Image (cartoon, helix red, strand yellow):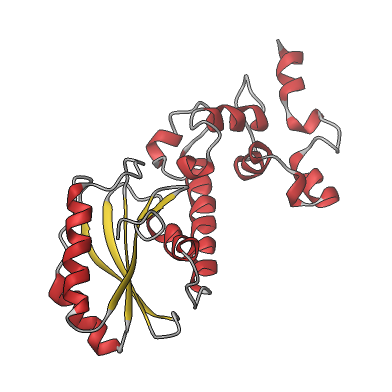
Length: 232
């Protein structure tokens, strides 16, 4: 039994197989997700190496790093070998990755397609467990003047203040708007309420000579564009 436990230790692996040494010698890109997590946690438990434990943690979320980022500290600590310190380390690393994506999205200054809107807003709302409604304000060159969270609500829906949207558009000198909200359920199908608020904002904007160019429903990996689908 003692020999079996010893063999599980990463210390007994060849340098090519040790995650830390592998990263130094071959670069971070060659490491698997499990190996990267193994570096974070440092060690496994009596029956699993750090890599094997990391593989099991990933398997619990279907090997999806975005879903792993949604696990709470308590949920991570449910895995044998993951104490509070390791759970916090994993959570912190994934949050840094999320923020990094957010910083990259901020570099988007001109909207040229619905995909551009998705890339701008997905890091902000794509992984949320609740629904949020955002507005992107554009000038006549489709450059982003401002983006703002208009409302934050439960999974069942969110309220939108049309007057507030138009007030901010006029203050910014915006000539076009793009609407966006997330569906925590993952569904891309617009609800009747989604269609109604789109038309309500479109009519209000037209009265002020402002165009509503699109409305996106954003999920973790995909989006639905009202404009692309011809339902704006």
